[in-house]
Amino acid sequence: MANADFNPKQTGTPGGFDAGSYREKASPEQAVQLTPLQQKLAGLEAKLPAALTRQAVALALSIVVMLAAFAGFGGAKVRSKYNTARQWFTVGVSADNGYNLSEELTARANTAANVITTAGNTLGADNAEVQTAQAALDDFSACLDAVQSGGKSQALTSLSYYNGSSMHALYQANETLGKAIDQLYAKLQEQAADPMKMGAVQGQYGQFNSAGTIIGTLKYNEAVYNYQNEVGGFPANVLGGLAGVKEVEPFA
Image 1 (cartoon, rainbow, N blue to C red):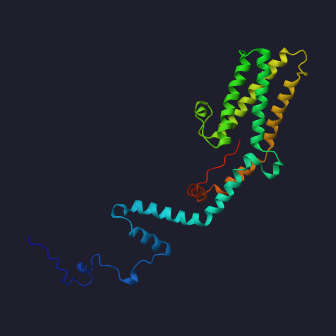
Image 2: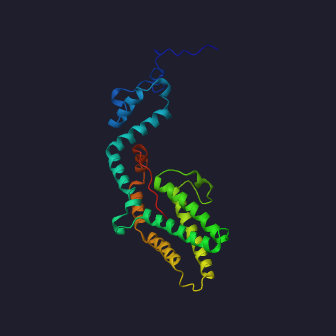
Image 3: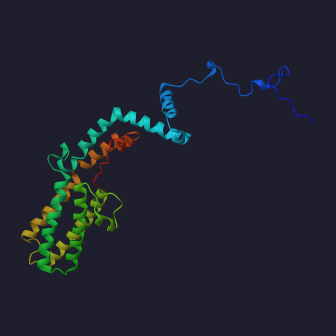
């Protein structure tokens, strides 16, 4: 069988396939027009080393370029909002009239320690309720220190309720501490001549519960949720990463 002749100069049958036009380059009038942004990204891709010009890498680069450009416009605003929000823990929000979460949590830790000390002197250091309350206070203090210092504590990893969030762990530890102190105070009342007249420990227990009540009514959480709704969605969450902004966690 003779080989077919694919001479590009061969004239095709009228109306048939013309091999000479196969994969013919489009005329300038037929070329796809790129948007200014596409032209910019194409220019950046053209400057990449050969090893980086694969489509996936080029696409990733284009996303980074666009996000970085967006961060130039909104990053400063996001950082400003974050700097304000992160101060709410120690300064408080205006709606809380001078109360703040950090001080109330510290009050819980201090008054719990005083109740435990009194109970240890009255019931003995080996008393089950005393030991349970002390363990709860140790966990609470570790969580509070981690949140206040903005760092991570190795002690938190041993907590059954620790899920990688120091603030979440602090909330759980506060709840556990509250139950332990309630049980310990009830044990002290069993030993008292008059359960309604417990002296200094009664005052400490009252302050412990008062701080808990204040924590439950603070507008801190509402303010944090509003902040997260405002800046927490795409691309603001990506902007946060580009700008070095971390999430502000609500207490509960």
